Image (cartoon, rainbow, N blue to C red; front, side, top):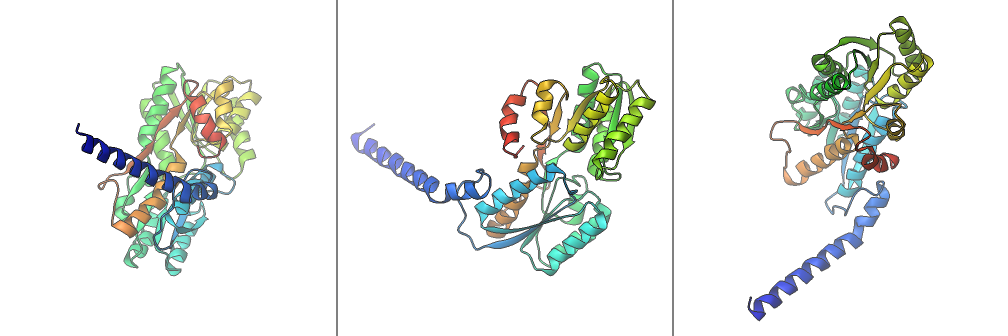
Length: 331
């Protein structure tokens, strides 16, 4: 390489290094501090207001992780995030309408009950408000007119759980549903049933009353001692299922969907066989970031297909890697 060419390359590399250093020292740390040290840099685009409306139940730590992801993206993208939630589909639809009435710049929404929520989504789109769907409603989100979807394929996730339970030699699985009628939860249990080779049962519990969750599972185990594996569809439900099994002699093992900081220690101790993570932080982050991209550059992710954030199965083989992030409240 000629000496002149070498000098040009050296100057270019030095310039790039300065730009990178400048980016990391002007805004990156501030954004990280504002959003649990996840974001990097901050957009200088005009501030927009985005409403995130979910079906999260009070006290369910899963939604704290969703919200942290949304907050991280909002900090990076100069977004004023308005979060609201209600597990009742009718009330969730009312929250969407409230976001429309307040003339937000975009809406990120979960669709656990598409027939009840799609009309409100269509109203938002008719009002010129772009909508991104995430977490629930993967098979129906496009019918509502939502631009994109971020979440796990819950049928595939369920199949993963059922196959793993069969491979581990269990004979009778109980799938516990904490909110009857929510499409993503039913899809998980249906997936488990489709790949599990032994006996299968499903049990509905009231996920908004955790003490009753434990007692209902315990009563089912006492009624049918042949149940040797319990699949729960949320981390708080899993913790109660573990306690219910212990109260019944500990003969039934537990696997779960979803994560919170209490899950990795349970996997390490053997109280929990595995957890199937759908990466809720990523869902919240991508939903907000996708609206910013659409508003500022006309970008739409997914090409008309859902962008998957799961399933990601965690067991003793990889729990140490994930645990450090779970401890920070982002997995």
